Image (tube, rainbow, N blue to C red; front, top):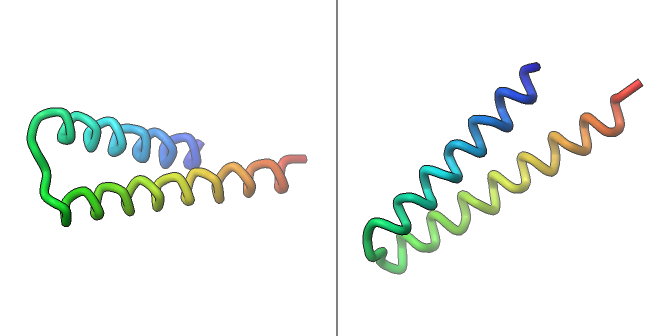
Amino acid sequence: MLKKIKLNKITLYTIKTMKTLKKKRLGTLEVYVIFLSCIYAGFICYKSLLNVLFTWN
């Protein structure tokens, strides 16, 4: 249950980030920050999925 909530928060954060990208032009720094945050969110999801797969009985 807690993992689903965490994944939902990451998904909502990603959607919010994509809406921000649509609304305005971004500088180089903002693009790097958004890119790194998306990679970080993907890593967290990947780690959570691996944890679920290997601890599932």
